[in-house]
Structure formats: structure tokens, C-alpha cells
Length: 440
Image (tube, rainbow, N blue to C red; front, side, top):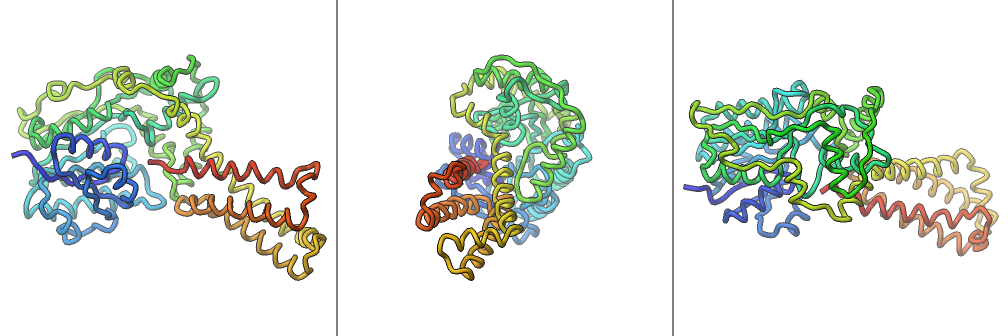
């Protein structure tokens, strides 16, 4: 009997959303689990959303109430690296062990979306926690299918695929660190189809299956294909030196500790150094596995891109993707330095306000307050959890500064150096950063 009620872990993620839509189209009753389901509920109202954090589902008891009436579970949850709100051992390993224990009472079918954990980057925490969860699932006695997709290409983009698009739109050719590394790809909708096939029984239980089109490409060719997809003229890729890779990885790891999820962290660099290859397929018993091509006709990279033609919004995304961190860092430094300079030159700053007619004591207090506010907002915007509110606060405080200056010293609008006019572009930059802040 086909599973009817399916719980998708990470249901609003890059792969999870495609899985939810495919399951709904196949007539399943879909529930999605995630940390913040508000926007997902608006985008996919056909899914019954469960707000839960895998970091807190560490016991069988914590899972039991979520599994009532569930016929199958699809695990599309995961994170690239520890940092911010992500804990790989908790979410990708310990939570899964607790899930398998809870599921033993009434065994549901489990489809685990994993990776080639024995390939490049096998030593990373991402691969290690995936590998331990896979091994525990194989020994649990539960019915399961493990799917190991290569680099997933779809209509939308996230993580590594988003970075590929950004590099494709790079002016005068993309700077690549491992341009000759081979990359295997699979279409996002083929991954979703594989999940539905596993639940339908077309992929036998206890199958460990690689998902990748047999044709390989190099990273440089992958970027060039996306550049053509975006409608941009061909441009040669450029080799980036190793020290630049290490610097980029260190900066990305630092951003990860502040809650951001940049794709170029050390885990991604370790994987890309050896190329993204398909995993070897395994199965129990030996004759249970049918070739993936006999179950799902996988699309090549060219077919995947052709079936998802790019629009101008894709070009905007590609060009803005690498500008977003520059905007965030630039705004942070601008506000931190502007507040710090005012404090270092406190007497001059306070005297400037006093010259507008303010009381001397009030001028000093306002100098302290505005300087600390500037520094605070500059620091806050660098933390992912505070960034959205900090950007809006920057706009509000800038407008307040402009209003106060207009009242106290309207002549500044005609000042040749334009101290007030220059505030307007910073407001627009903050609004732009807020508009492109969301990752999903």
C-alpha cells in the first residue's frame, strides 16, 4: 500500500519544497517540518506545517507526537556547517537516531536525502554526520531508501547552485578556484521524482541509490553553461590563487558564526577540491536495485537548463548575489566608523550641535546617543538574526537625522560637500540590502 501521509523534514528548503510539491501532485497528504514556517505556509498552503527545531528533537519521546498517523518520512533537512543556528551533530545525527527509535513502534517508510559521504570532503563534519545517520538507518530495521544526489540544479537556486549563477554573471569572466574539478549534476525535479518513486515502491526498500546524470562537466564548463543560460556573452574563466580560496573560506566561516549561510565555506571548498561525483549505489539484497535510468530518466545539465529558461529576474539574482555581502559589510563599516569618528572627535561633534542652538549639555548627550546608536546598528547588521531589523532601523534613524538637520540647520542642504544629500544614497543602500536579504 502506498504511503498516504508523508512528513517532510526541511519541507521549505531547496530540495524539501520541490519534494512537497511533487508529493502533493501525487495525491499525498503532506506535512512539512521546519524552524520558521510562517512564509512557507503562505507559499504552500496545501502543506500542513509543523514548527519544530531538529536541535530540540533529541529523544524518541520528542518525536512520538509528531509521528502520529505518519506513513512515511522524507528527510530533506540539513546544514552545510556548524555556525549561527546550525548544529550538524544535533540535526543530522542525534535527531535522526531519536527519530529512528521513535519510528520503530510503527515503522514508516523513510526516504533519506543524503550525499556522497565517501567522496571529496569525507572528513568534514557535514559528511561525517550524514554518514553516521545513514549507517544507523541501514541498521535500524526500518524500511528505507537512501538517495544521494550530486549537485542539484533547478529552477530556483540555493547554496552552491546560487554561487554558480553568481560566478556565471561575473564581469569579464569568473574567478574559479577549482575550475578543472569534475562535477556531476542532477535535476531538482528528478530528485523529487525519485522520492515519489521510492514511496510508490518503484525503488525497492533498503536501496542506497546515487542520483546523477552520467555525463560529467568541469566547474568551468558548468559556469559557462549557466552564463549562456543567463543570455550573457561567453567569457573565459580565470584561475584564482590558493591563498584567495583560503581567505574566502575563512571569511565565509566567520560569517557562518554570525548566522549567515554563505556557500563558499571551508566544507564547500573541501568538497569542490575533489570534485562532486556520484556515490556508488548499494542495495540489500543484491538483486533489489534496478538501474536509476530504468526508474527515472535523469536529465542532463543542458536539458535541465533548457527546461527552466532564465528570465531577467534570474540575471538580477545572479548579479546581486555577490553584491549582497558587500552591501552588508559596507553598511556595517559605514555606520561603525561614522559613530566612532564622532566619539573620537567628541568635543568638535558636540560643539557642532551646540552651534545649531542646542544646550551644551543636550549637545553632548545627543552626541553620545547618536554615536552609540550608529555603532550599535553597524554591529547589529552583521548578525543574521538582527540584520533585517537593523537595516530598517538604519533607514528610520537616517530619516530622523535628516529631519532634525532640516529643522536645526536647513542650510546644510545647500552645503557644497552635501552632508545631507549623501545620507540619501545610504538609505537606498539599506533598503536594497533589506530587499535582497532573504535566502529562501
